Image (cartoon, rainbow, N blue to C red; front, side):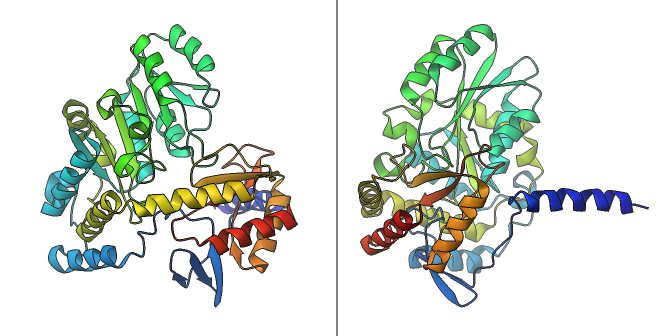
Length: 383
């Protein structure tokens, strides 16, 4: 009955495999931050997002365990039914205090939060203007919204300005740190342009939160921008904070509106309470232990210095891209690195544009100087 459909799906899989684009999940036997154990073999991990080493921090793990003992494993319902627990409210209050926003809502993932932000806050008469390299969650959120979608050249305000001039009701969407290139927009200049054309600015700061700005407040704070000047922002807890879940922050009116009309929020089970307890501890450590950011930025500077002769993308963040071109070459170098005890996955289309397959090197506060020297030595030999 559906044999033809199954055959069609298999052909698509075979085609992707022939193009060296088939993804294969890997099961970790143990994760200790800087080292992954896979099939009994240990590898130095250079492709995770645990920038501050909080995913295995004993205090965070204890907070998770204590939260499970106190609140139970799950929230039991959506936030507006039975899912809102005291620890959810504590986490929201902690985020508001840390980031100077009036109110936040919690979500199961950054993908869900971005979908809710764009779909709920845009209308049929709007046009969403997205940076060309926006994350898939932003693109999908825009495509599934009622608004029109236009994209401007990456971090190019000269390309954004005519779109704003030609569009009567625009919302501008960008990222604090772009997940594949590791660079950042000039938010101050972008905000000034948005204010000139009365266009709200929406920010995805998944990779900026925790690592940039005073107390890790994120990209806007690092660039001297008041959070109140950002119409709405999203960040998640699965990167620098080392846990999982996400939030949207903004004014009370904006967040109240998403709470009432955001389907991703209304119809999803609330975050597990012990997870929220762990995130609370992560935020506390992120704010108070600046040595984690200091060590991370020291590692970034060391890597950039040692790898100055390699064709790195222009990034001063924990995300360092080394474009190799073809998927075949990126896969081959990734495999050779594994043989040398380094885990660094190849990033291929459609995650990145055709012809720009790369190694996406991510640095952590947990990496030692020896780790970084070893990585650069291997890259220099292979690339």
